Length: 74
Image (cartoon, rainbow, N blue to C red; front, top):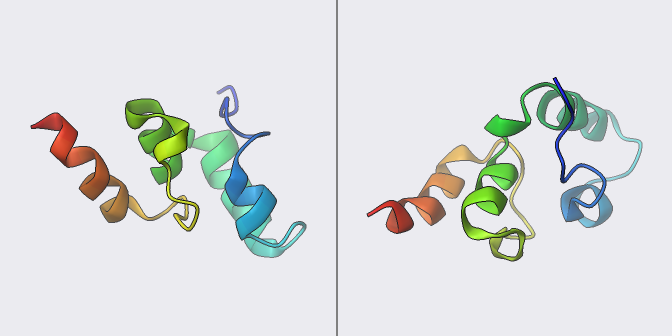
């Protein structure tokens, strides 16, 4: 699988999480390389635009992402 197209520009990895940490490595492996379509940040960026992704949203915050996306789906 190809990596996420937002991987190198994702503000989450530049501002929210400590670079080089175990948690960063785990998130990158799981959500940037393997299953990026499951990433809460990716879903919002694809559906609403990257500028609508909350800065404090972690990749595994699925419920929060759905709450933002749901009103758009009607």
